[in-house]
Image (cartoon, rainbow, N blue to C red; front, side, top):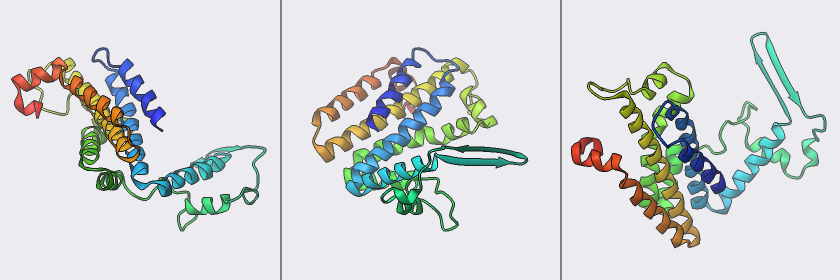
Length: 236
């Protein structure tokens, strides 16, 4: 899961040479980074019990992937692996399938019942205020708007153009640049939380120091120093 964080973060960097319309696509990437970072910290905080639950969820969902169907109106789509085994032939699979089903027999959509806010709270309670605040800020910065972008709403389109906030006299390109910097900050905060969590649980102080150094470098980007000098409220 940490490797996946690195992969998505690298993609975000490659899309950050300059502001532009591609910032819209960065919302889906940073949403994945934040969600993944929260889950990593949540599992680290929960220890072996939660790690095993994540593995059970993966096994049963992989089995479900072997037979799927969808019906919308008069349209039907089906997919079935011809070599799909009987679940009873795989040790523990029947129990795992039942674990991730609702009382009505429908597959649960989430791997845990806790909301993302509850997962952040649990991670912070065990791993410390730094993890809590970093994840909280990251979620607050991008979660609402990334949902609109990912769901393809009219608001999401307008937000990416900077048209949903007072913008008299503001260059739209600068507004898109603001959005992009928020995305980078959210990703940075998430990685900082993961580094802190790993250090707290397993003793990797060098990882945490490197993360803090990266955050200091981020704060030295001219975009932020200009904002702090010319617009304290914006910097806040």
